[in-house]
Length: 297
Length: 99
Image (cartoon, helix red, strand yellow):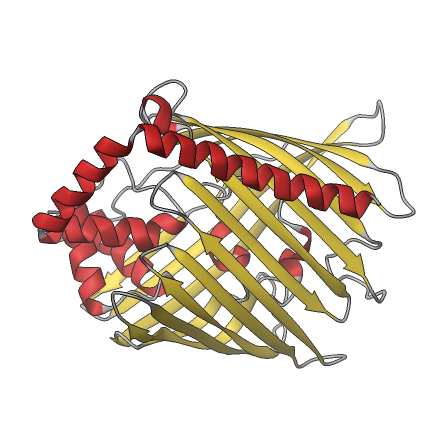
């Protein structure tokens, strides 16, 4: 069991500046072996603390600690109130340098028309061993094309890790949300020296049946398939030690007042290892409040 | 063999989702078409902002159920960075969230 508190701070300063931060505070309760007693341990992670300057529509400069922009999972889907399945996909650790970067990032919109938009993110991260602010030295970025008429986004990512054994990571991602239906398809492919893998996820909110506030319309089935193929043993890379694959079925139920229930079942199939069932049950609650008095606009 | 089986299962489930969703869409077509034409004929700034919200921010999450103008300003500034919104997108989405 893991109660998690994920506070997000957002402080706009004037018309161009923004300070934003997110932390992950969790207490993990676990059993010491079958039939053993229970213990607990707390973890606190500063996920990002960044200063953004919106120079114009084409350029935003970010300095500080930020989520590494590689594919879509790390930047967009990690918040517990967004992710439709609580477990991260296998390849989530490829190309992200432990998920966080300390340094400088440039991002923006190259071109934006009614038919398409091209966006970019590029960054450089220094090596840091400071407690709660660890990061790897590296550089990389992502370029994506978004087609508003079909709500289709395709992206490609690259990272060069510049400490220890230097290596490249490459990735590609897809997001598709057709206007015709509340269906969402997301997927990623990624490779590094450790191996390669992919995940693809489909979710369908049943809101077309009797509206999104009906009993059935609040339900959202989710299916994700993922595989990872190990090519080289690399310690502490956050990836399965052998070839692995896992289909996962989940159900989300959206209650009023930003409360969501979710449950999922997955079957982890490992080459040369014991296969296991993966069950997850969760409840998330999202709320907003002003941190201090200020102008109404 | 297992790999092939699961790849086929993944593809099958994805197709099933799409089929179900699009089949439902046909049943609801008059309502969808009506709302679409409404937006096409009279796209107020708020309506344009709503469309931009659903196109950009809605790719990852649902809109908040309620939000004050002060909260909206902070949220939209965050989304501008995360979703690489333009100046105009930011202004219109703010119109939608805090009219």
